[in-house]
Length: 75
Image (cartoon, rainbow, N blue to C red):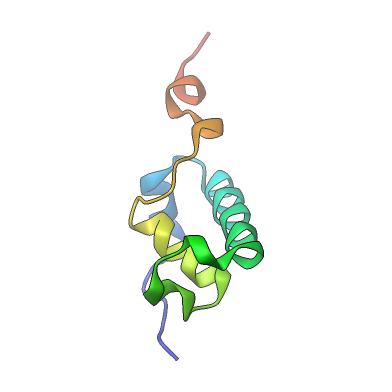
């Protein structure tokens, strides 16, 4: 079994909210579990959670519901 070589702190580099990152990854994992045909061949061999994490860390996921410009603006 391959080790995941990402730390929880690295999630914040892609999306400022680490908790938002976890939501995005878990939603993608659910999509992969329900329809595994829309993932790469090499990712199909992995568990859905690991595949979603790899896609997230490779910046392959889009997450418009977590628009960082709106989150970081002050009123």
